[in-house]
Length: 476
Image (cartoon, rainbow, N blue to C red; front, top):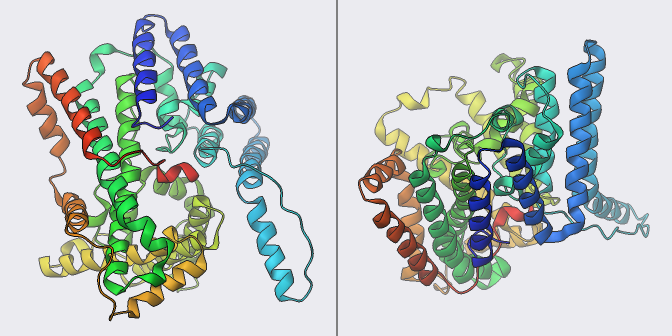
């Protein structure tokens, strides 16, 4: 059930009406939202509802044991087991066949080939996201950032809440569970801003991302050898805009839907292609993941331990490399994702080494900042080639194609150029643009606001190409 579809629109209207009808009855409302979330997930594959329930039950039991123990060593063992079991489930579904395939290739290269059978494992939708939610719950309880364990009903809803279940954002237990412990307040709902986020997300997905994917990105990345350097360059730019519009669209819609139901999600994107350096980029791109990796992986590994004086083999650079390699692997069981993470890890380490002062680049003159933004964007695009390519062979073929200067333009059109240019220019709009639009919309009477929302939905649907492709991050 995709967000930009009539099926989901009818589903959400029903959930919205019934949930607010139950607003005076806290527990029944949570129970209804949980049932609706399981129904949403069952639309993808009902069998994995058992996995979702098992994840909720297992993490809830570990959380109670961690909270109820006064022995520091026992608490540490319990959280270790809980994290290990979460990762084991994720590894079994997502990485088992990848490691078997890598082992087969290694044995073949050594002349000791074996017929190691693959398992027919289907990857559950959203498993990376709800696994990270489970880890967040037990670790937040262990650290004390979550002061009390959730009730079982709260835990079921936290893990399964449908707006963010399939593709995020990653909402930490310490942020979301306190919101479930008390009834929602109707007076605290910024409905106009929520609707603006949803409409903006629909436009980015249905129009911008879908056109870039169908008219250029999919064709060029499928057979990069058939295109010249200019097409390859603009296909790379197009994918940069596509993945941003696609993923930020999902999270904008998720944030808006959650807000209409009375809950607050964290911001997940902040104009990442205007970033000056890679530290800045990862404070703007998929913020909920980058901050999760920082707090639950990088810091436990030792963070900046050893400092800049530790040299290029110091703890800081090792921890950056490990964090980004695992961040790449989190995105998918393929060497292309590992290389993508490795590129970002190497560039982060290089930046930490050359510019140890975090705010040093902010003091550069304007022309130097502009060059830095352009350089950062193009290095991000270089990494995107590996992220998007079907396999390592396609990625290398794509890079080799930049030497094909004699071939004419085949894929790039004026319409696609305008979409790419517009998508990149939007990265430099005022940061308070949504608040400005909200203030303007609030000046209109409610019937006019409703009419504009309806007209905008019809316009977006008519502007986009036929059909709606799944969101890119569904595969993760």
